[in-house]
Length: 139
Ligand code: NI
Image (cartoon, rainbow, N blue to C red; front, side):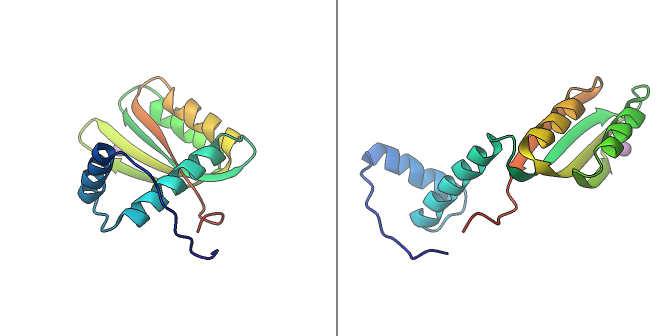
């Protein structure tokens, strides 16, 4: 961690009011931590724009396990990429629907491709890749 710097930011009072309300709803007790989180979020997003950078994320999938061969297809794809998929959580949401959360790690380009392939598989009702970081490059 570097030394702590204090900076002054000029900001319109209406915008600041909106920001204060937003961060209060999110549970921040001071602006500094909220600003730091916004900056970190942008830095993490930026990392994902470089296909060769090392990233961590989760892929969330919702699908109907009655769709023919879908379960097998999704499992096959996960085995193909077992080096990038660290762990999988499966929840039987109801009689028909399953929720899966996959923890993925690897090069941003590879992880994005795996997520796209899983999410675009026919029968997957909803899917989302959530990007995060190993935290190693953030303070
Ligand atoms: Ni299930």
